[in-house]
Structure formats: C-alpha cells, structure tokens
Length: 389
Image (cartoon, rainbow, N blue to C red; front, side, top):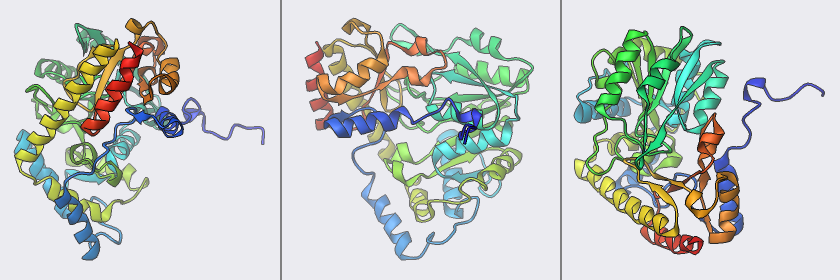
C-alpha cells in the first residue's frame, strides 16, 4: 500500500514520551520519576469498596451511560462542599474513562474543523492530539519562567484570540509546571471568555494537590462562567488509583449533553465497579485530603532540595506531582539528550519538557521529575542524582 496508513491529523504523534521513558527505566533498572503515577495504592477502605461492588454484582455489566447515580451524586456533592458550585447530578454530571477521555470527548463535541483552540504551553501531551482529532488548530500561549515560577502573560493570551477562536483549554493546577492560576489571572481569563464569547474546558485533576496554602479556584465559580465552562475532574490523582480510570465532567445541561454525544461513541461506559468505590472516596473526610497534601508537599520539598544540591535550577511547584528543573547549570541544554543518558549516568528517569511544547526550543533546557513516590524511593533517587554534581 502506497498511501500513508496513519490519518494525517495524527501523523505528528508517535509513541508517547512516557512509554519510551518508562521502557527505558525498566530496561536499565532505573528509578522512574518520569511518568506521574504513585508507587503506592490509595486508601484501603476504597479498595475494599471496589471489591464489595464486584462481589455484590454492581457494575459488572454495563453501567448507565452518564455514570452510576451514586457517583454522579457524589461528584455534585463534592463540587458543592469544596467550591459552592451547584450541579444537577442527572443533567450536569457525566462520568468518563479518566480525564483523558473527558478531554477528548469535550474537544470532539465542541470543536469544529478549523476552529482555534488556545492551550497553555507547555501542556499535557493528549491536548494536542485531541485538538488534532477534532480537526481544530491549536494555538499555544506559553507560560514562561520568572523568579522561580512559571507565569501566564495575560496580554499574550488576549492577543492569541481571533475570530476563529472557539475555546480556551485551561489546566490548573498546571502539568508540567506546577503553576496554580491565581484568582486575578482566572478573573482575567473569565472576562476574556465572556467578552469574546468563548467556551472554556478546564482540566482540574490536580485540584486537591496544592501546597503552601495555595488555593485552587475553579473557573466555573467565577461570575458568568458556569454556563460556558466544562470542568474536568478525576479520581486517579486524588486517590492514587490511576489504573481505575474514573473521571468526570461538570457543566451546564447543554454542554454536558454535547460532551456525552461524543463520549458515548468512545468508550460508551467504563469502570463499572470502580465508580461505586470512587463515590465513597469522594465522601472521605477533609482529613484525608489534608493528609494527602501534607505528604506530597513533604515529598516535593525532599526532591526539590535534592535536585538543587545535584546542580539543577529548580522551579518549586505550587501544585501537582511534578518539579520542573533547568539543566543549563549542569552544562546541558538539550532535555531529550539529557533524559536519554540520565539512566546510565545516575540511574534515574525523567521527562524532557520539550515534548509539552509546540515551540520546542522554548522547552529544550527543562526536565520534569515526578515526586508521587515513596519517601525512600525519592531519597535513593536524590542520592543517585548527586553524582551529577
């Protein structure tokens, strides 16, 4: 066959960097601080809830298309309890196969071929692929390092909007930089969306992983934004069950119906028994979420300090699982080459941030490490990385 087999929209996307680097970690016996998954399971009582659902025959067959009622109610209650947002569990909550499907379904449903989608660069790699599958054109607005953090240039964001812009794809807390957008920044985004009549899809899967007293503010809670925002949440990061793939959206009835119209032809339904377990997880007391934040903040500090001692310039994150570093103080400026040789040099795997950029040169000297690992694993990684100094 002479014609290309891969759809031209996806021709630029090969195997993800996460698969490549995880395979490298396995092959070399290195500590994998690349892919963002915990190396411990979540709460025992939530695992038992999944087992109980399996044994009771709940979810072993197709669950309802929008998600089981118990989980949709728990999501609505969670939004009310934490953010004062009211959602009807029957018409304004949709359960998805993780946040990745939620992103794909939202973009497939809401973006027409030729529409422009603004995304904050660097961005989670599925964003670009999902925009491409929807036939849209991605328009990156770059978060830039400044005084130890990454910041959004609101003038650049405003300048990126054209008559072809359909929506803004927002991620806060932000992967990979760890930035948590402030109320002032989110207010500016909201005002721009209202002024230019834009939709906003917000990826908020790290909502409970914020540190140093930082506040996560859902965009949908700001004036005028509830009915033009699709908010994406997920259980994987909050409860350390990334393999269960239970995510959700909350949005107005019209937006929820639109997203469901695409989602039903992707997985249709998924994660039946796990949905019942996550319904229980969302009702855990506030002490669980406080403990999660405290544990991860301590691990962030451990890894950040170790990376600094090894010679990296460190951007200490306000949220998420990840620390971004600058490798130029170590005499390197190519993150891909650095990450591919790091296992041999130090027995540790990381991710080059350039994969999260359209403008790859902007991300070339930056490398991301995940700290959602056991303390002893991080201590060993820090010990190994000090060889670089």
